[in-house]
Length: 537
Image (tube, rainbow, N blue to C red):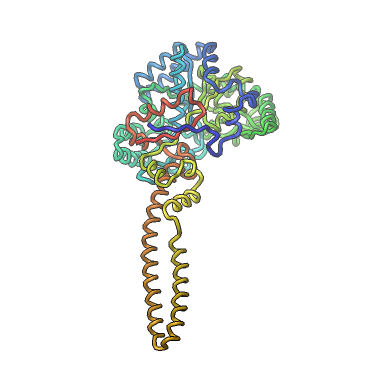
């Protein structure tokens, strides 16, 4: 397997704070509790303390969740290890259609690999994947793009007027099962019969976005024993209720700290990723099935048409905790309250907004896991590699955009513009014939007609040559267009990184059973902070 590693700074549109965290930790250490190193993870794992009663209850709930999703023997063994004292390496993502963008899988693989390395080092660790089922942004999860036969295929489910509803509760319906059938056919065509079976078993009409995603991941990562976590579970909300109560009781102090952190980031030259105002709280209310932010103002708390005094709302978090949901800044804190997390695997945006969450961690939890970057990948198929060689291109030149890419491809394929050459030469020939014709007419005036016929004949044949050259050029450029489409669709889909735009399943179908394992090896802690260009069959 050919592979080339790029530092994240070599990719476009990476958050400044994320790059500083990876490369200049001293500059941003005030915003994070630990440096992004395996040494920091090991140190945290050796002195980790977590309440046994909470561990027992969370492990019990996760056991039931994972059995319902089709847990493998390896996952059940990891659940037992978690119950007996193992620490957790955690990642997570929204529950996108057919597994969502490829980086969802890359997050899971990185968590699996780091947990393995910790265990090899004598610290028992298990990988956990937090499925963001409480998120209400349906637009983010109801579609996915596949790379197939050199072009993009889009799968998309209707919005169904489900605005504001947690996506983990939205049924796929017949449309979801129909789309899954179409996707299965594509996977089977490329040799991915097992993956097609996984989709068929996971994406049925009666499943939700959350359950279908969970069943697919349970099958994809059966051998690795990945533990899945669905935060919509009422039991988990009950365990997290004291944290909700604390967040409301301390809302004013927390808000001041978050506003101050925003100013600190600004002074340091960084942007706050999550907007915080004087009315912000860290919670959503889901009492009527719709997820609405809770705001503070005029001595009360408000969500939609509802309002409460602080004491009423704090009591409600105790009586009906399942009606509350954390916002982006509290969500990782709730996750790490519920789990014995020593390391969290995140992407560039996540590790940037953690700089704001850090004040929430310190105020409510008193600890914070080590934040590590997920591995990133761009997969290059055999045809794309041949095209890159043929046109003398690099991946970076494809990333530069279609205009620059087309210019380079045409330059390599058509050294000079034939149309311009023909225009220029035709004018020169016409001038030459006019000049010769005048001289011939002086010798014999009766030859004027012959000169004119000769001129028209040459012009006719030149025009014929132009048309034939044009057809040849069009045919040649058509090939270039096809090649350009293959490279753009695969390597710069929708003008974005492949891992953010494309589903991984079609790649795994063509790669075969070894694909996930090969990628998992590259998620080693020794290679943290890199994006890999990987050649696949």
